Figure 1: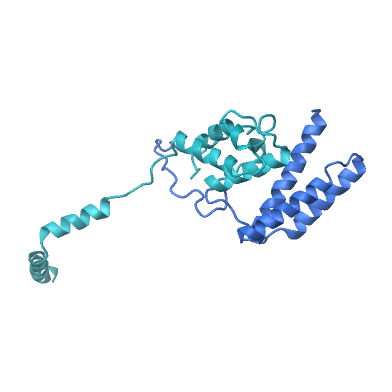
Figure 2: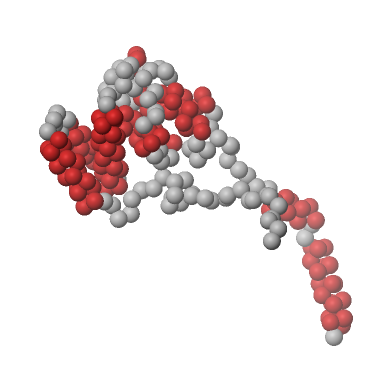
Length: 101
Length: 123
């Protein structure tokens, strides 16, 4: 795999992950989410064999546009991630000597 | 002025002590100072089992090929998007967020276990 291919793979992986996360934010019911996930996967697979760089760029741009358009106003955040409900709760106290001023 | 009030207040508190047994007061104090914490970290065998269970839940993966060292791509036959799904399932299972940079390094169950044992916020 060339460098450019690796970069592109990471970009598509990131797009796919963000799409799934957005779907998960909107579809709380697991059955509905699974259906949407399969749909998303089909959309990504449909563009699997694109070879024309312009078409690829267009597909990526379209996906980005949809992601910004459909972004959830109150997305799910993992509890201990920044912004999560447990983020920086019970931080161990700083036991070092205070600095001399 | 205060001296005049004080003895009466003392008597009142003494009367209170007489009615409330000392043993109960001590127990209440012990309860106040006892704090409980969740057990620190996850056991490695637990993490391994949970990660392997996640892999077993994928219908694209052949159940006989599941192993800790099996590479997602070459051994289990997953493509890059399937790997994203596996990483997302791991995120959900341990309620952590795995940044893309770290997710890129996870190519087998063993590496996933390694990564989770390093994250102290995994549940």
